[in-house]
Length: 344
Image 1 (cartoon, rainbow, N blue to C red):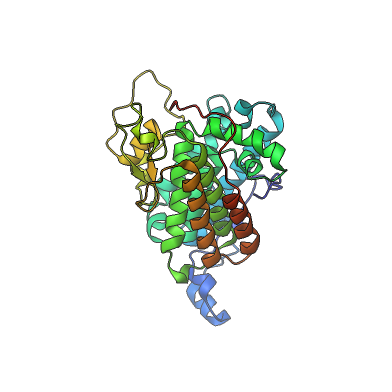
Image 2: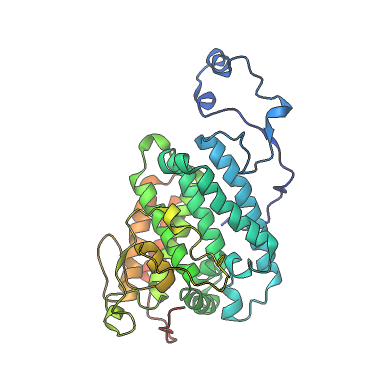
């Protein structure tokens, strides 16, 4: 997904901010000037550093997406550094995410904090505004909780031999709380775009987000322990509730769960929110209220659902994306190595 290092340094970017979406919707120059009400939009004093904490950023769709773009640049920069510096010869290193290095990497930790802060600051627009903005926020959630490059390798980006090694790395990742949070972000992207208003349109990042979410959700369902109805008969998982991933969730109740930010000796209180329980403890999942008897059937169904949604809302690369998802779904077979059924 945009597998290049960002050219722009997010710390030095400044750009004029045109006070609200209405200016972009003006159909004539006179109407545009009227909406400006005598203000000069190119006044340098109105240029922003794209800091999500800036009080001058209006909570409009374009403003939120601009602010989130800086967070994306920061996350992409750290992700590329992580990918370039790690030893990729073992499944453990291939499954490393920004969350895993946040404890000792200030840049990764700051990017995660900034992502959480963005939701708090822009909550009204993210919850009720243009759906493309909240899709971007959830996409960034995937970027910090997944090693997306490894998941793409598991999908066959560089052939079957590499895919097998990558799938082993994804299996290791799928046993973590971070992976379960990623699963929720991926499911929310599907829900948001399924229910979006036609007037919101579809931006390029939203199409990319839906494809990325399909890979994350599908491979999690394929290799995660205790995710299916059959696994719920095991003594270790029989007490865990089934979580329907297609239910809307309140991120204000989830907070930083699954992001590794709680490192103190005091244990966290027992969760009552089903999504928080799922992040901490794992357990069986359902998709649109349906539980599946085996992980392969569930993964194939997820790839099919996401592919169908892409064909409805996509505009740019839908043929390629849908073709990839169909191939993955058609060739999903049991992995030749045993799955560790321990939940971490």
